[in-house]
Image (cartoon, rainbow, N blue to C red; front, side):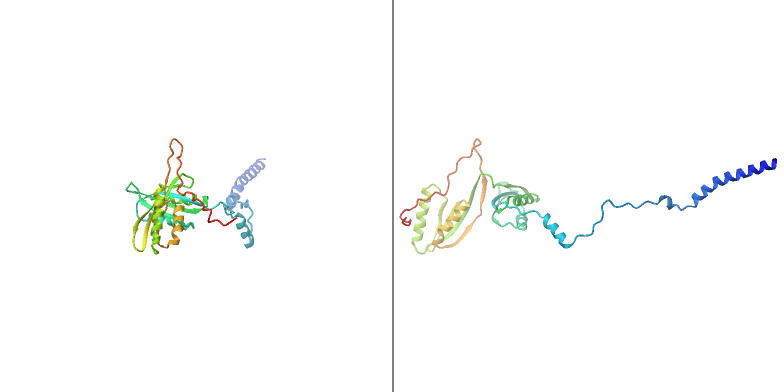
Amino acid sequence: MLSTLSKKLTSSLTSNLLRSVVPAASISSTPKNLGTRRRRKTPLVEIQPPPSAQEAVNNILYNTPVPSNAPVTRHVLNCLVTNEPGVLSRVSGILAGRGFNIDSLVVAKTEVPDLSRMTIVVKGQADSIEQCRRQVEDLVPVWAVLDYTNTKVIERELLLIKVSTIPPHVSEDLAGEESEANANKERVTMIIDISNESVLIQLSAKSERVDSFIKLLRPYGIIEASRSGMMAMPRTPVDGIYEEVEEEEEESAVDLSVLPPS
C-alpha cells in the first residue's frame, strides 16, 4: 500500500512540474521578434502610374486661368518715398519686370527734407495695376502708393518748345496766338525767348492739351521740345461739393465758308 501511494505521489508531482516548466521553456525558446512583428499597412490611396505627356498637357491647359478681358486704362500712381539713392531704379524695375511701359514719371523733393513725391502714369488692366501697386508699396523706402485713377485731381504738365521763325511771319502769328490766349484768361502759354531764327514757348496745361499744342505747332517747324511729365494733386471739396473747373480747351467756331457745298 505504501509503495503504491508513493508511486502515485511521485507521478503527480512530476506531472505538475512538467506542466509548470514546459510552457515557460517554450515561451523563452521562441524568438523575441515573433511577438513584436507588425503587419504591413496597406496604402489608403492606390498608387497610380504617372500620366502620359498628352494627359499632363491637357491637365495644365485645363487648370490655366482664362486671361482677363478687362480694358486697358490709364492709371495715375502717386508714390511717397524716402529721399535716398536707388529708390527710382527699384520702383521702375518692378514696373519693367511686369511689362508696363511708363508713359510719364516725375520725381521731386517735397517740403519735407526726407520725403519725395513720385508721380507715375501707366496704362494697363486694373487687376495688374493693383498687384503692381501693392508690390511697390512693399518696398522698404516706399511709404505709400496712392491710385488717383478714379479721384478728382488737377493735372499739369510743363512744355518748353522751340519753334523756327523762318519765314519771318511765324513769330507774328505766334505772338497773336499768345495774346488771344491771354485774352481768354488762360495764361498758360507764353513766349519766353525770341531770336532771329527761333521762338521759345512755354506751356503749362494738361497732357492732352500739350499734345494738341505740339500738333498745332508742327507746321511751323519744331526745332526741339522738352516735357516735364504729368504732375497731379487731388482736389479738396468745399462742404462736400467739388467746384466746377472751367475747361481749358474751348470749342472753336466752325467757319462755314471752309466747308464743302452740300
